[in-house]
Image (cartoon, rainbow, N blue to C red):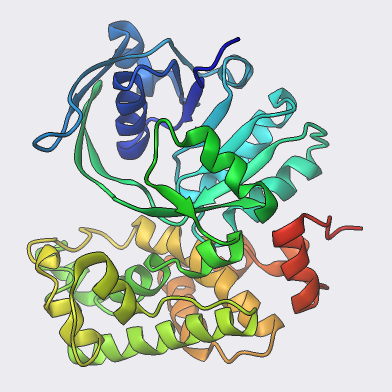
Amino acid sequence: MRTTIRYTVIGAGHGGKAMAAHLALMEFPVTLYNRTPENVAAIKARGGIDLEGPDGGPRGFGRLCRVTSDPAEAAREADVLMVVVPSSAHAAVARAFAPHLRDGHVVVLHPGRTCGAIEFAKTLRDCACRADVTVAEAETFIYASRSEGPAQARIFRIKEAVPLAALPATRTQAVLDVVRPAYPQFIDGGNVLKTGLNNMGAIFHPALTLLNAGRIESTHGDFQFYIDGATPSVARVLEVLDRERVTVASALGIRAHTALEWLKMAYNATGADLYEAIHNQPGYYGIKAPNTLNHRYIFEDVPMSLVPIASLGNRYGVSVRGMDSIIRLACIIHRTDYWRRGRTLDKLGLEDLSVSELTRFVNEGNDPSR
């Protein structure tokens, strides 16, 4: 009886290459999928990825079983599919893989941002995928990593605990059991609403970028993003956004971490307010701002994080005027309708659900379309 879990990593960017190499070094059979063959040609030619890691961490040559741009081949050899692409590509991945998934497949989004698992599962249903597939999402990405060349990657840090939730939550423990031999760091995240509403990138990334738009354009990002960018006034805006996020979560019966609590928990950084706590986080010093406004902090985090949180707020009676102002700024600066492109409740098929119906859906799996 085969007991070794076979992994397919979908995405060969900074995170996907690091994950594929690390899994291979842990001696799991690994397939790496990327939709663009040219992007993985060097990896395919070499048969794997060179990984550098922190002291005492993983390093070496991670030999892969296969490298492919064929979704059928990528799915056929997998027990678990690890999706490591920008959240704006989740629906496209679901459409590409829907015809090839089978009963028992586990799909994990790294991370889901907000409502990622819900969007992925709905896309599979819309594509008439009838396989009994479990879709799960991580609250954040487990690695701090970078691509260092065509077939090279570096891991700077591996997080010690990352919440994970399946859709429905009754399947979370089964997913944790499957991935535990590779990733004991994953812990029960409650449900996918909780993992999605604890999305701190939604609070920090878009507003910091947009409120420093002039400085980013004039300096090409030559300043410390969190330290110079989070002035007292900007930090007050972040506090409003954070308060709205926590209130949306509360309206759904979820106790979300505040940004202050998260900084304390993740970095042991404290302060009387968010401005002080950010500036008391040593890890933020030296991190440069994006060098352009055409950056995932806007084109990914606005439609896939801020829009679904604001959409939940609008549906369940929470004022989200701060979030709406940031979304509108992003629309103006990028000349893009992020409300139309984003994960709104109507696109997710959730617009008619009460709080109790939505809770039952994420916890127990009742099909919201019925």
